[in-house]
Image 1 (cartoon, one colour):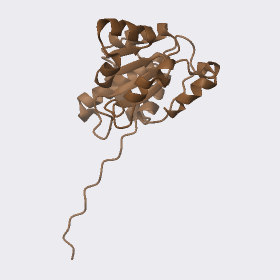
Image 2 (cartoon, helix red, strand yellow; image 1 turned 60 degrees about the vertical axis):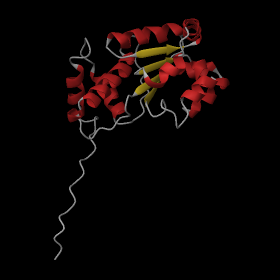
Image 3 (tube, helix red, strand yellow; image 1 turned 30 degrees about the horizontal axis):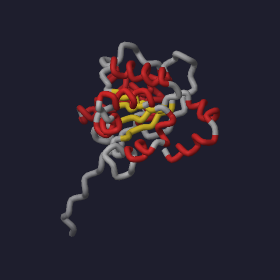
Image 4 (cartoon, one colour; image 1 turned 90 degrees about the vertical axis):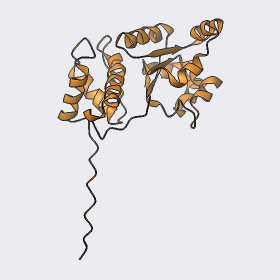
Length: 199
């Protein structure tokens, strides 16, 4: 007779794309954002949290940027209080990499994120030049500091970005998601941008 007790059951991985997941996300967000998210936003957010790619086609001003902020707010809330979702697993000190087609959008989105209490960093030719004048290394800062890193498309093929994203580097293990704002423009950027497909 075998007196060895059975191994305890492993908890099932929590699925955010369920009624329970939607409720959890709404509860987490209710005190963190100044509006009530639309159902389509919660549905997209939960897909992202379940590691399902999302290609959001929504009207201008309908809240596409909220996918980025809500994702990071929920992720950081769960990391701060693992009891909210004990089976969730996210990188430590997570960072979302966001590619924006214009400098204006980069700064506008970073400002929105900072108003919600998220740390954001913009790296483009202008910010790199200004940082150089101040004696600051934005690429070094990107390794450990921001929750969201907004990049100009041309930075994706720069040697500094290649160094930042190297597989064994500190930043690479922080990347929790990659977003491309105005993704329909990728086609108009032409063949030279297809090199960024390694992301």
